[in-house]
Amino acid sequence: MCFYEPRPVLTVSPSWLSPGASVTLNCEVKHPSAGWSFYWYKAVPDLKTFNYKSSSYELLPDGSGTAQDSYIIHGQTHTAGYVCRAGRGDPEYHTDHSRPKFVWSADVHSAASLTVSPDRVQHFTSDSVSLTCEGNFTEWRVRKFSEDGRLSDCRRMTGSTCNIKASKSHTGVYWCESGSGEFSSAVNITVQNDGNVSILVSPVHPVTEGASVSLSCSLKTQKILSNVFFYHNDKLIENDPRGELKISAVSKSDEGFYKCQYSGRESAQSWMSVKGEQDQNKCSRLDVTMGLYLLCMMGFFLLSTVICGNAEGPPEPTVTLQPSTTQIYRAPPKPTVTLQPPWTQIYRGETVTVRCEIHGGEGAQWTYEWRPAEVNTPPTSNEYRISSAAESDSGEYSCRGRRNSSWTEWSDITTLKVTAPPKPTLTLQPSKTQIHSGEIHSGETVTVRCEIQGGEGAQWTYEWRRGQVNIGSASSEYRISSAAESDSGGYSCRGKRNSSWTEWSDSTTLKVTVPSKPTVTLQPPWTQIYSGETVTVSCEIQGGEGAQWTYEWRRGQSNIPETSNEYRISSAAESYSVEYSCRGTRTYLLTEWSDTITLTVSCKLEICFINISKNLLFLQLCSCFICAVQ
Image (tube, rainbow, N blue to C red; front, side):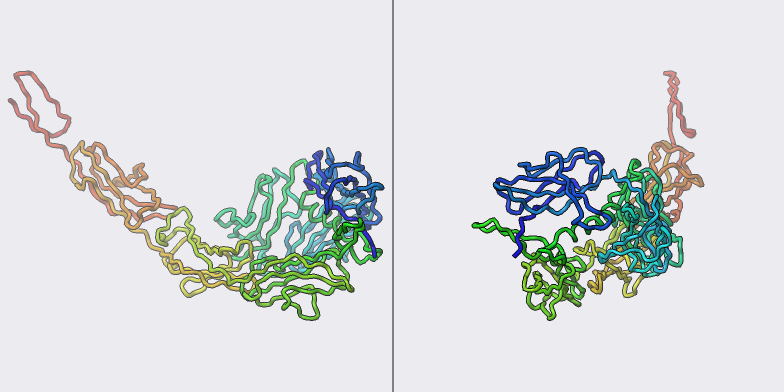
């Protein structure tokens, strides 16, 4: 039997630092008790060979036998790996070293760099793509991590350039490695194998703050597209289509996932990273995380230990302390149950694969056992595939593995829930209009939106119909830019995820009408008034109540500066005797002009008296009056 000391778990906080910041290491023993002392080391791996056994540990300053289970490193300026171990007793015995943990610093300079031509993340099948390594080195190789986690080298190297004819299998993370072990930052390459779906044209490398960048959408047969919608982190940037998305001065808030939509079909999304001006030659967080981090962690975690001299892999230890002895032994690793696709909520009719993964047990000949027992179909494998899920497939799944005569413990339970797909809800989203009972006027813009409650985050494809006729849109929104009477009807939608369709939503009726001709009225309702009186001319649009209208007025053939639905004449004069008309506008819609109404302002008849005896004189401004002498 082979005996082992317990292995502590090291955590670092934070794992990503600005240059010169501090980092805290924490060393946790699985069964903590008093009397432990802790030892802190820097791990120095051989990044060229990925051989953990050739690594060395350098004791950190004052890192020997501390009573505290934490250790602070001040002024961290570079990327580094750390390990810890613990000891207790007299004479003191020690645990194994922890697995290495890494602190990634923004102050990472590399003598190697990678350029991609054409300079974009997404490519079509059969595109010619060149990846060129640059730096003062004579030997190069281009390496790739594929989607299924495999590490491979470029097979078509010409000097320092890797040339590929893009296919779906070329999707992955790429970086350069020199013969002396220098690494470039990593880049993403995504290959679209459907020539009818657009790709997003976005930069491969991080964009510097303050710089300008343009994103566009391209088809295999058409490089420049117009009428494109752009999304940032799944949020529509603007509700108006365009040919390209221009950001004149990039800021950190612009960082994130972008995608484009053309003719109702969305491209894959790509991450655009933004770095500060001072980080021109430094690795971005994405580069480090997806390139060097994956590379280092594979070397450290897959080759970290050897079980009793058996080099099949490094299973995680389970530590058991017996009351009467301090002997500690290693048990097989605990499996993990995963779902593919990774959704615990599955809809009826969809396909899902339940997978049992034993981390550190790769390459070994494992036999698997599943719970519930009905999923065991000899020979037992690490995958259980449900081709057309039903409610009866709902339940708690767990697994364990056996190698030779040794069983692992049971994995934690993963709960799978299979339900009928939710019924979508259809809503109307006006664009600067008010929709009342689903009624809009011709020429206006409206967006019909299909919402699936509980289905957020999934990749849905949508189907639309007006009445019983299908209309062409595969996205969650159907936009009517300039409504016509032919757009009237009952709209409904449904969604599909994988092979499972929801039921059709309830129908929402949209009615498109020609705006009514306005009517001009007078208050008081007399077309004959006298000078000095007050009259209000009103513009009424039947059926447009509650909407945000702006009005235009004409007096005779001249426009007057009034935008409300009322034009008030406080003290009428004969010059106001003229024809009045109006029309209404909202968004890009104009009604026709109303019929005219004629207002006549007459002189008020005044009778005045002149009292000669008292020498009084009454002056009347009105041009017509009758005088009598007393």
